[in-house]
Image 1 (cartoon, one colour):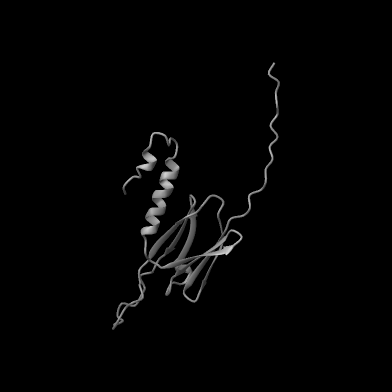
Image 2 (cartoon, helix red, strand yellow):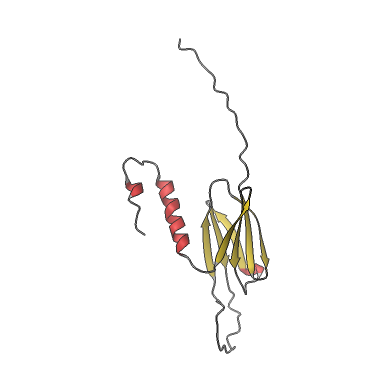
Length: 139
């Protein structure tokens, strides 16, 4: 992957994490299967819906790794191969789909219904912190 010229500037020191985040997001955007929707549900809530027709709940896995949501679908090898298809338009392959999460985003749950996997995320309001800084005299 080509490195961004912006982050190679000598005036942006210590932004390696941001560069890695942008590169991960670009890689995730290049993926095309399975199709998905991202819905803003208001008040910081987001729902990601993936079209996973043909997958059972035990063939799907949702994990969060280092601020990256990973959705994986694994097909077992027990599919009947003796079937003769006149047309096969429903994909029968496994997948890994990733989404980069902002700081503070949490996965509240996942639901599989009618071939759609719904993943609900939220960004809880951060707790207000007040830190009193002591003032010292100059002498």
